[in-house]
Image 1 (cartoon, rainbow, N blue to C red):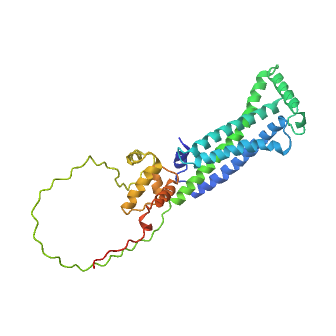
Image 2: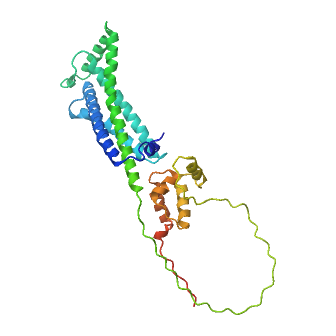
Image 3: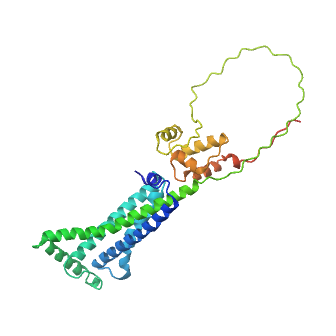
Length: 315
C-alpha cells in the first residue's frame, strides 16, 4: 500500500479531538525517539574518535535525513519522482540509523568504560580495546548469557530510531488528512444572474418560390466516431471498481492528461466542480490546481471566469 493511499484510508474521517490527541502523543514520542537516537549516534561518533560538537553531525545527517525522506514520500504525488526518491531516502537513512544505534549499544556493552566522553583522543586505540573486550566476553565462560544480554541491549537501541520514524510518518499523515478535510468543506458560491439579450425586431423576408426537392446523398462517415467522454456526476470512492472504470475510460496516459480532458468537458457543459472533487476523479494530490493553470495558459477557463461575449444584433 502506497503512502498516498495510506493517508486516505487510515486517517479518513478523523475528528478534531482525535487529531489533537495524535499531534500531542505522536509529537512527544517523536521527540523522545529522536532524542535517544541522537544521543546513541553521538556516542557512536565519540567511540570512533570524533569529539566535540562535530559528533552531533552524525545524528543530524541520519535522523534528520530520514524525516526529510518521510515528508517527501508521504506528501509527493503517487508514482511521482518525489515520492519514489523520498521513499528510498527514508528507508536508507532509517536503516543506517538503526545500524548506528545497535553498534553503539554493542560497544557500550563491552567491559570497561561505559561512555566515550573524555576518551575521544585515544581514537582507534579505544575502538580496538572495546572490540577485544567484547570479543572476550562473547567467547568466555558466560558466552550464552552475554549473547542474550547483548541482543537485548542492541534491541533497545533499535527501538528509538524506529519510533521516531513511525511517529513522523503518523504526524504527516494526520496533517495531510486535516488539509484534505479543510478543502472538502462546502463553499457557498453565489448563483450567477443570467441576463437575456433583447430580441431584435424581425423584418419580413421576401417570398421566394419553393425550391424543388433535390435528392442529396447522406454524409458518408469516414469511420466510427468513438465515445471519448460521458458526463458522470457520481463521486466514487478512489480505488473502487466504479471509480477505476471511469478512470480507465478517460483519454490520456497520465493523471494530468486525463484530468485536463475531464475538466475541459465539464466546463464545456457549464459545470464547475471544486478542485478537490477533480482530484478525486484521478486520485491525485492537488493535481487539479496545476491542471487548471495549464488550461488557463491555453485559454480554457471555467464558466465563472469567462468574459461576457458581445451580443450581435440585426440592423
